Length: 515
Image 1 (cartoon, rainbow, N blue to C red):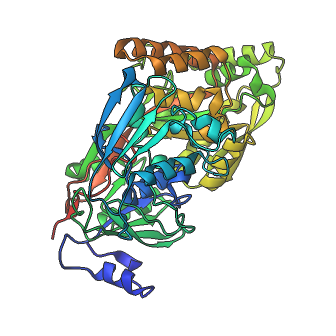
Image 2 (cartoon, rainbow, N blue to C red; image 1 turned 120 degrees about the horizontal axis):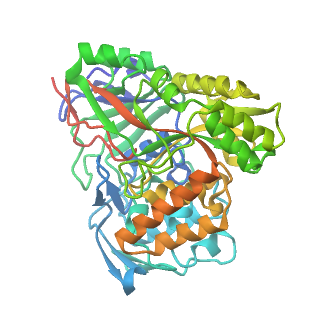
Image 3 (tube, rainbow, N blue to C red; image 1 turned 45 degrees about the horizontal axis):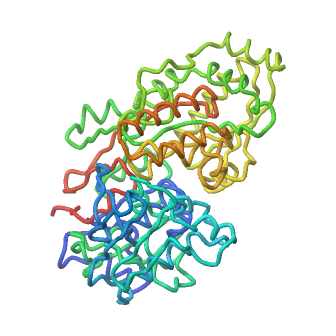
């Protein structure tokens, strides 16, 4: 594939990557709608950052495109002490991109770095099950007693209690392994063990990666992978049709044309993802349950899904996607009922409504239309909504800090388990940066979530997930929107690509461009 306008004389390595025609397949090109926050795994709290991190780094475990758990830097692991101790045996012969051997101490140092109280990542909770991890993160200990380095080739983790899903946590980008000591410029010039080596990053324009010929899992089929920053969906689609991108999400409003003109290009798949508006449960009128319920009655979610989102989704009556055990697809929802919304507002002391801000990202045009539709419906019941449009990073920061009254957000699964749609999003220990952007607090919910995590029996755990999801839904911490069903198009000359249900499940190693 021609590497479009990246082939500029910015550096000899970049020129070599752009012009490569020998060896593997020609270059591949992907896109993001906004610039990654960083290339440091410890800061990977958004989808673009997590995807870029997954190209350069490896975790102890990994996911494939369908969310299946696979060995990563650990080629096997054993479970001891009734699920309270895990021993991960490391893959031999692995080297970082700077040729330094990968050792067990790198795992320990990486995890301490993620847990470091000085870290600005805010997503250390995957490691909290390890004994002593939370004390270390709170500056109450100088080490994590539950991490034990067993020579150069194994690491043991003692947990505070049994946790059957712990290996899934270690596939998350935030705990990808970095060399010890971590380079000072890791965020801009990452060095990992992954299938792609970092080459260049022109902010708000592109990132470029070259294949790692020594990758332990086999070198990628393509020579280079470029990632362009393209906010506009129609531009993304035009670049795909011109052969300049490998795959894109079909723009909303364009589905019928693509189905008619290019049906063989299309892939449709339910996503492990939920769209929602976080209602800050600690701010102003939104502290009142009746107000939050009124908001859910006031917005015609099915109509917005149909007219703005192309009907590509299932109305959410909870936070757990239908694909996961624990979801209740038959649950009775709030329903569109403006009269009921007005009654609830009056009962809460707001018969004339109130003013509120809704923060949304400027990086997605369609989400902007969703925000406008929500605004219009709420204003019909007296809630005056000011739309605050910011870049994605600023919007997320406003939500994390509690500054936003309401924030239009989505949550992609970090691991394919209902726990990922409950613990980070609704446990009170994860306020703000941890994922609980609604600042929802309920001691009973907290207790049930922790009980589910301790439950080894799949059936019993699934029942708890359903109970938790029902309880939280009735508390209306969000304006619940929908679970997306994604529609993607792949260029016919691109072979081996499939849309992943987990955002870091597609690493482009088995993808190639045909002549």
